[in-house]
Length: 199
Image 1 (cartoon, rainbow, N blue to C red):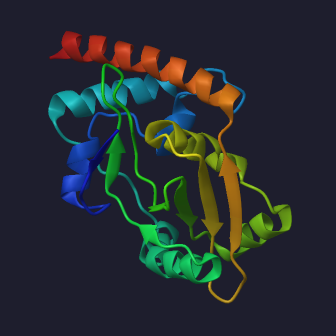
Image 2: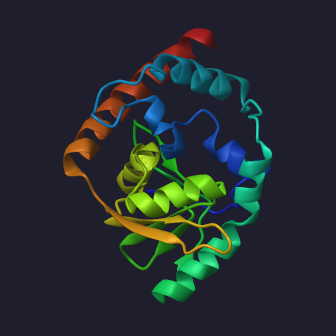
């Protein structure tokens, strides 16, 4: 794994991940039960286009998404206070070799852990608190982060001011990670073929 030192959300960060499958989009490649996603082909074409054009398309960000980005530092500090852990921020982690894919965790914790922060709307946060477990919308992302980094666990944090945070430790799912790694090898190979055809 290579760590590219940049600030997430900056032009340098977008350039580093341009045309590379990233953990936040692994749900577009594989479903939670290890089957190819219906979004797979569209995501494949999107990345091929980005890599060839040398830039990412701008994506829509609504007010809730922007608020979540702004509140990330607050949630990170709260996590450090609650757990007593120190969080080291990274830009982007990228694999080496033929199959190149990436992850941008919200922090690295100690030698074994990662941090993934969400700052959802109040109703969503309350639903997360009541469930008390990792929302399945983030299963592929957190497992993908573990695959890319080789770390043992991810602490998933959901935070909303005035309400208690949810902190859930997500361990490696060996069976899913095996399926994800195989699928990413195939996906990256197909991506390289498409890029060579459209250049």
